[in-house]
Amino acid sequence: MNHVSEGPSHHYVVTVSDNGPKLTEAEFNEIGLPLVTSKKNGLGLGINIVKTLLLKYGGNLKFIQKEPAGIKSVITLPITQNNEEKQ
Image (tube, rainbow, N blue to C red; front, side, top):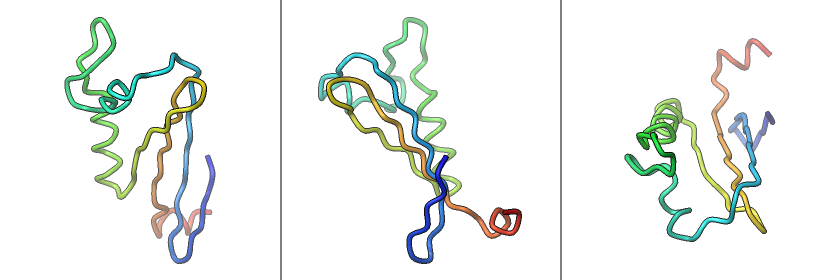
């Protein structure tokens, strides 16, 4: 986890990478869409739930396609005044 300061904004950035197969552009664009899954018994709700919670707290989730294959997920959350006092 990284602590990033940009001007008056302070936030945490968490990145998670995998080395999965190369996705087509269509597959990549479907990541996080509700009810879309590649899992046999998946519901297609997990990433959407995470994204909704992050947005509720002022955060963000984005995906970056790695070369030659794999995905990097980048989670950003603002540091609130309460969190800054605890540091």
